[in-house]
Amino acid sequence: MDDLIIAAIRQRLKTDVTDLGRTPRTGLIPANAGDIADDEKHLRFRLPALLKRIYAEIGNGGFGPGYGIIGLTNGVPDDTDRTAVALYEVYRSAPELRWPHGLLPICYWGCAIYSCIDCLDPASRMQVFDPNEHDGDDWTDAFFEDSPSFEDWIRSWASGVNLWDKMYGDDGHIARIISARRKRP
Image 1 (tube, rainbow, N blue to C red):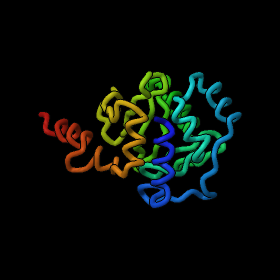
Image 2 (image 1 turned 45 degrees about the vertical axis):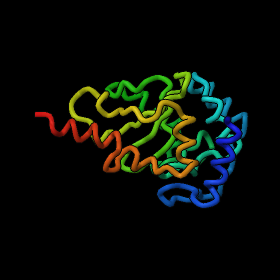
Image 3 (image 1 turned 90 degrees about the vertical axis):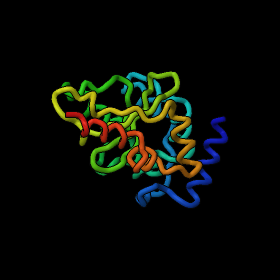
Image 4 (image 1 turned 90 degrees about the horizontal axis):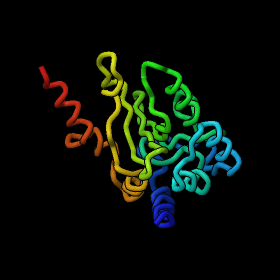
């Protein structure tokens, strides 16, 4: 199944490198196995096999949904010049966030919104971190369930689904949650 997803991503890249028009500064350069292994050791958890394959075979960030997949060490950073590993460290070091161990930010949407992969979940569940919707002391309101698996998430993008609209569009699941919150007294 992973081979089909890799092929679908390559096909999608022929027309769209990212949804929001950001092109890689240096083209798509795959991550090397040593850097991936070093990042896993540093993070103290393993990356899901499909995500590792994508980093190693397609590119170390700079393509995909939103402004693109965020690279690992030596990869394409987000707009704050942080890699996925650096972002994870920043969020984990902020005690007020109570950032979950193993929740790696991998896709940047703008406005501090990130899609994150739960590397400790067997299905590699996807969540969205949107600090713009935080209200109060408990940051759990800034986390939203997104996709039951990374495989489903990336396959959807590769097949042409607009993931932003799926989340925040008129019928988007996150937009509905936010709307319901705002209607509460």
